[in-house]
Image (cartoon, rainbow, N blue to C red; front, side):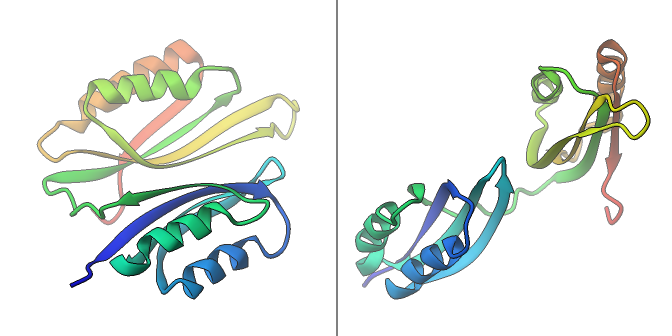
Length: 176
């Protein structure tokens, strides 16, 4: 009896039409099922993560075919979809301030000390409207143990924000 197996595909390629089709057609032609994905254009490259499911008998052939798609650099690994972690809450994190190296490193180091796990993050750098100064911004979702008093994390992030000269806001997700 063949069981379904899951692959996570990480890829990067020069941005051009047809990239997603090349990956999806390869998955489809090898009896795979596209489950979920996140993709974006970054610095002239198209990057993404895709989770697919495939019957065990097609697993190795699909994996090899994905790694051999022309003009796409990919990493393909078997994965298990983890069950949802119970007793956690999702907090929203927003960071804005003058750009400088190390902001993400400093913030994630503070989060790690409180067993906070970043589940999603998007960052941007843009010119401030009046001054033209480069401004860094980040929006993230973090997961913390439910029993943790997240105001302790917020207090630490406030101290860090003062040290770095940026704004950091930590808040519960609106529907929590």
